[in-house]
Length: 213
Image (cartoon, rainbow, N blue to C red; front, side, top):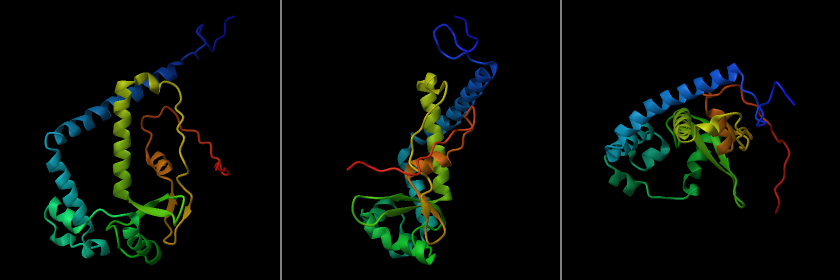
């Protein structure tokens, strides 16, 4: 039986608008892949230099925080010196600085004010709130868009039709400093712009749920 909406192989018929949208998506991702790919190619020629430059910028931007002063950020000139002054530690070592930012509004851990917090809830103990600054969110968006662009090169057919992403809520509440907190997956998804989207995304939220245990 003939139907104007499906082909004989039972797949939906593509409208000219859908074909055009797919072409624009492909063009957008191709240009993004070209620009970001050139940057990555340049960086991998000397990754140590790139990493040292990033570390130097992070130290300079946070040297006037309570954490930076306590660990002598102003005197750090190399990675080796940073490793000596800032040993690897657990979250609890940083909790007093995070709490000072949340409860007292102090510039304790990040020089740039946090925009959002990632909350991770373990099976025991207090939840862990990790500050995200505007610069951090921008970097996350850039990384996510770059990965999507290269995924499109490897498997372009995966971008045909709709894509369903399952994430936890980006917004779960507000802290004492007025900043929201939520899950990492939800924040990354909501923070990512959709220049490559054919249409506005649909969102299904589950406000009530429980876990088996």
